Image 1 (cartoon, rainbow, N blue to C red):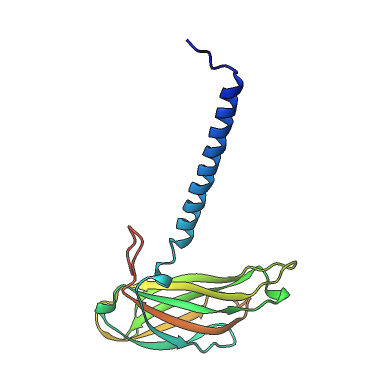
Image 2 (image 1 turned 135 degrees about the vertical axis):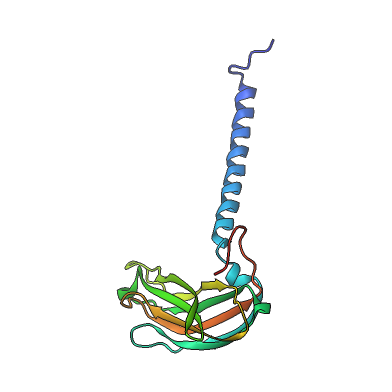
Length: 179
């Protein structure tokens, strides 16, 4: 019988194996992080872009309602907010909270809350482009819908060039339901 308790070749082998295992573990963790990062992005990257609308922003940070012709052949439909945050010290590490509501003939079909943040710090201001899915919805019937996006608390950051992107036939993450 061979004793494995301490030969130099065994320790080198175990060190190499341990190093390989650490490398594989890092690669697996990186892949898992990427999957989690992209898990909420189906509304941004899947399906087909149906339309883009420039949004008019009020002084309070809310956006003027947008009228949209939608039909069930487009389901599921993603409504994405795109824009740019500014690099201003007073806005670093702050955010705006919003509530998006899709209505048909004045009756709400779907609602959702979301935040847009400015990730900079006092040491490193950074504004930049962003894209965020506000809602993913399956509409019940063809019609002229209204999407309204209102602030849920006082505005803390500036959003420049706000746009609504509508994407049709987006893919949903497994186990997810539309509103």
